[in-house]
Length: 244
Image (cartoon, rainbow, N blue to C red; front, side):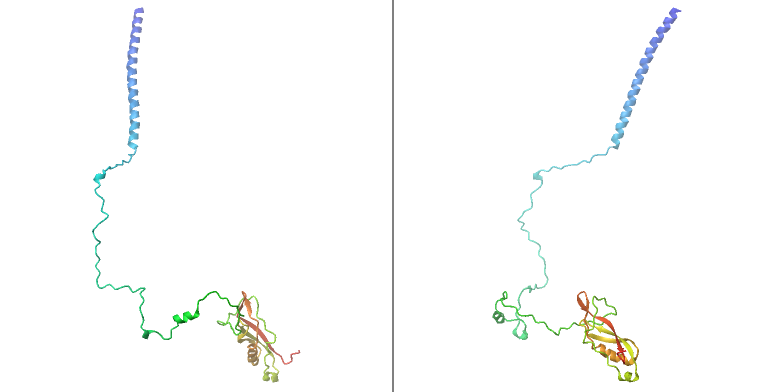
């Protein structure tokens, strides 16, 4: 029994060593192959995904291969341009004499003698005189103003220049009284330009009221520091007994 156990112990030890060496070698080879395959796949994939860098080519030429430069003294003339017909001479800036028969006798340009008689013109050394202003200057109105004109100052009748209307004799005998509202166009000088009846109690008083309105004088209406034309309404009362 002892011999059998010794034999079995010796056999098992040797077999284990052989198997260990065998499988260790396979494991080492397999691990190396797997490692090499993984590294190859990694670098191979990286190489496939890498973009190609641009390639620049430089051409080097010798100075002798360039050839001679063009001559600066080219004797070849420019091509001639054909012109059909005769070429007229330029007339711009060329004075053309005018015959005496064509000169207008009523010329307004001063002659050399007249210009020489005037003498040189320099700074004035005389004393200034009073400035004269024309008194009859009138401002022309373009037309009747609108019914409403904004003003800063209303026109006012000038005392002593607003006569009363003439009372019609027929109305006086008949004892007729009334009031006429007259619309007056006052120009920029304060003068009445036109008058029209707005409302009347009796037609007998219309014309006398218009005649009296055209004789009135006003101070001009003012807007933006200047006179303006406006319409004003004035009532003209016709009373037989002014005291009542």
